[in-house]
Image (tube, rainbow over all chains, first blue to last red; front, side):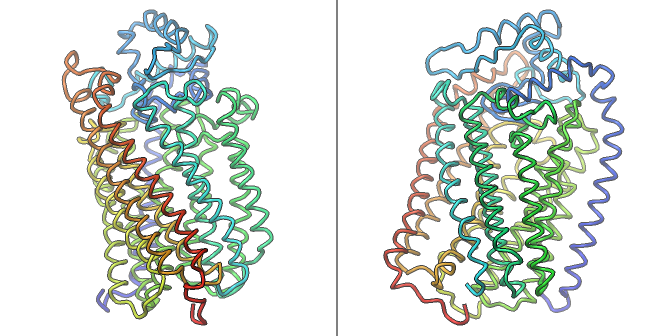
Amino acid sequence: MSERFTKGMARNIYYGGGAFFFLLFVALTFDTVTVLPKRENRDQLTAQVAHGKALWEENNCIGCHTLLGEGAYFAPELGNVFKRRGMENEAVFKAYFSAWLKAMPTGVEGRRQMPQFHLNDEELNDLAEFLIWTSRINTNDWPPGIEG
Amino acid sequence: MKYQSQAVAKPYFAFAILLFIGQIVFGLILGTQYIIGDFLFPEIPFNVARMVHTNLLIVWLLCGFMGATYYLVPEETQCELFSPKLAWILFWAYAIAGTLTIIGYLSVPYATLAEITGNDILPTMGREFLEQPTITKVGIVIVALGFLFNVGMTILRGRKTVINMVLITGLLGLAVFFLFSFYNPSSLTLDKYFWWWVVHLWVEGVWELILGSILAFILIKTTGVDREVVEKWLYLIIGMALISGILGTGHHYFYIGTPDYWLWIGSVFSAIEPLPFFMMMVFAFSMIKQRRREHPNKAAMTWASACTIMAFLGAGVWGFIHTLAPVNYYTHGSQITAAHGHLAFFGAYVMIVLAIISFAWPQLNGRQSNSPAAQKVEIASIWVMCLSMLAITLLLTAAGVIQVMQQRVPADGIAIGFMATQDLIVPVYWARLVAGMAFTVGVFMYLASFLVAGRTRDQAPALAANA
């Protein structure tokens, strides 16, 4: 590198650039946190939805599935499963969801298996509520199609 | 080895390599489960194997970073470590906590682990890469505090170089951003937003400081190039890393509920993220070209220079291919992400840890480098590992392209489902498994180089006064 570009200048780019962009990031974070309640319909985030999220975590669902595109890529996306399997009808989805989880694992040889999580009816309901709530988050129109 | 206390790096390096082997074993299990869905079910379900695979990676890289720090900080500060005893105590605490956590993952269902570790008191579990029980996370914080205290006291007492200042800044950032793993609101979007403050600000932020300083240290030692020149490069590289990487976090905020201005911010800034990796590559090769000495450790120099190429490809090129919002709309959460993840972690962080181990291990054992015979095996292992990881990456990219073309691009009704798409990809997954086995061969060759080094230690250059 040319001698005109000194170590001092490089250091200033590091400290100045790092600090400036971190502060900008913090400012944008404030804005994001302010608008998130509307985008995710936080007024509909009931105790059941919160319990559903806890169940989602305690059973490590993210270890196989993606949720809004994040997670593991072994099993289907669940951010829009309410639309894909429940046709956006809560009763239909809950019936389907509960029957599905109770039937696991399928035991079909050579196929990917979902473990049996032994959830009771209340837990199944709350987990479904969590997925229903999640499907209504404004995700900038992601995923591109119903298949996730 | 100039300072006695550098020897505490040894257990950290040895444990890191042990966990690396474990990570690869679980990688092979996962690769098999992608093809034979019920392989090892119900004993080791996919989610458990994946958690072990990714957590082992994080734990061994952190272990490698700590070993690297204990090795290079005394040399940079020109004084002994503040407390080698504390470093040993923390090593055992870390190793025992890490081992117990992995045993926990493998021996009981995850929900049971959550229950017995009191996850309901402070729920932090069950989020990708942060699956550790809350008590393990607390343990990590305690170890990190002790570690930073030990290293910080050493730096305060000794010479403050750009390398050790950048390194400690990176390590401090690592510890600070990890604290966000304790924040788990019931709002999914808030949870995801700050989850990235751990994950992205680690690997595309502060870890790059650690990577840059370890690389700069190795280059100074092996090439003898003037410290001023190296430091100028280091500042510039990490400056660009932060300028692009901090707002580059926005490329994770496209489709998780966050506002749409992130589509622009994330695309623009993350598109610059390859630049620091490109500069790192230019830096390494120009330092080697301008070298003022012929260091006998060719293997370490191969690791270091290859690290910059693979990091540029993995983090830079493979990051760029899916980072623009309109592209990511179709690739988000597909095997393209997995392809990028594998090459980026391997190229940037696995290789820099193996580079510093390659450089430091002979010195910690009283030699300037390993014998030429041992280095030959080690360099061959670098080639095998790099080429097989490239193959894994290309194959996962192909898998991702199939996913996008079959499942994402066609209209509803024409697009095929997730599992049907997976069935189509099976031949690619077979090839990926073969590439994974080739990688395992590379790991065995790497381990064999230690045996050869031991057997031919009389042919190794002794630790010279200038080492």
